[in-house]
Length: 208
Image (cartoon, rainbow, N blue to C red; front, side, top):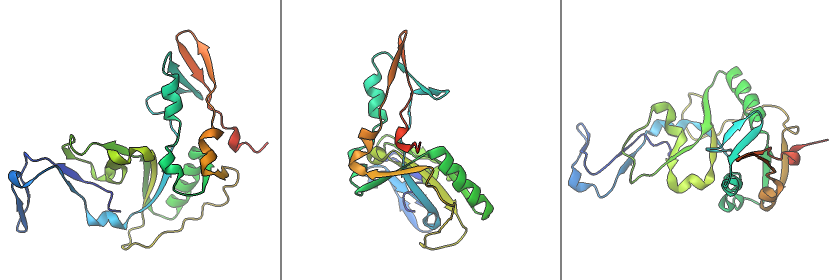
């Protein structure tokens, strides 16, 4: 998994690996990305996430300040570039899916972590990431993907995929044409003083 970036060094730093490499500041035209080969042995499930971002979510409601309604609608839309990755999309109830997956992963004795991916700007970021955070950091040019990742370490080497059977998920998902996903979600706003309360519409997953 080569996307696991460990560190970015800017031109003001000397990057050195004892006995192998000596790069001086004048040799660096821009920040340099470093990653560990061992992270190529991880198995990662990448999902596109619809989430509230900076908006507060409490008791099933999203609190929106007056004038920010459009920003919320944009936040809850999936980028068209993601929808062009395939003709169909599977929309799922994320919390329950992740819970079932983690339960099986733990039973198999694998280690794992899962969270939203955090995106950074390479030209302005200087520093390093914690080892546990590396699979969840990507360059800002990929931010449109709005990724959620489940990262599994089976403690084996190689590029082979791992199959994890979490049972039937027909009660959690709905399949639809990818081009129809954004239209299937509706944001209903209820005015309350200077704020709005919205209850996200999840009826595309209802079976009743």
